[in-house]
Length: 256
Image (cartoon, rainbow, N blue to C red):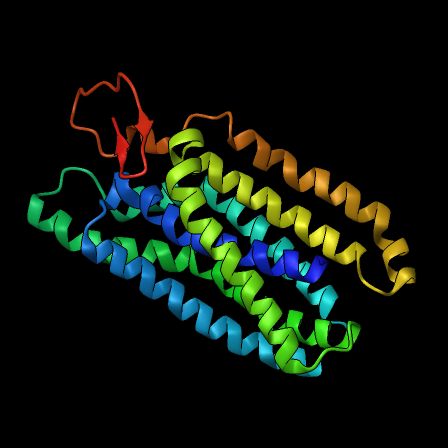
């Protein structure tokens, strides 16, 4: 069950990043078809490269579960760090006092560059999981490669469905984009730790048990704090002397 849960969590996170990423970029670059195309293209490219890289690791790894745990941890930490850094980079890529023509040109390059910097790496890491989870399931549960691949693919797809509808219809209107990404980051970090603890090597698990628990607390504290901080997107690209009276997020767009 732990392997299927990891596949579902990775599938959820990848689609949540794809959907939430466009909402997150909207205050700086809008949500035109070009921005959506950039986001979808970057995610698909990262998935393709990640799947191939994960297959290479799975072929040569004696302990694929440990690699899976690290991938989840690294992806969660990267998303948490992006919550701090992305607004600064987006603002730098879209300076103030631009004409409409100048801004339109930067929307395309700015959204593409931001997606490559902040969305491609976690999707790449999460996409490496599937081959490793298939390898682990076929070894640990003595299944054929086809049975293991089918189970992991089904779990990942169900997680992706939850990521699409859960983020669009529930999380964004209820929690907001930034808080939803922070929760996704925390879930990936916890998932990585649980996968490590479920590894069959008891000796390794015991040696790392205390350190991993402290690491979880250390990594989750900054992520949790993000949920209670003001979102930099609330005041991005405002006209001169404009004042924000209220901010709300819907399944369609951020309203200011």
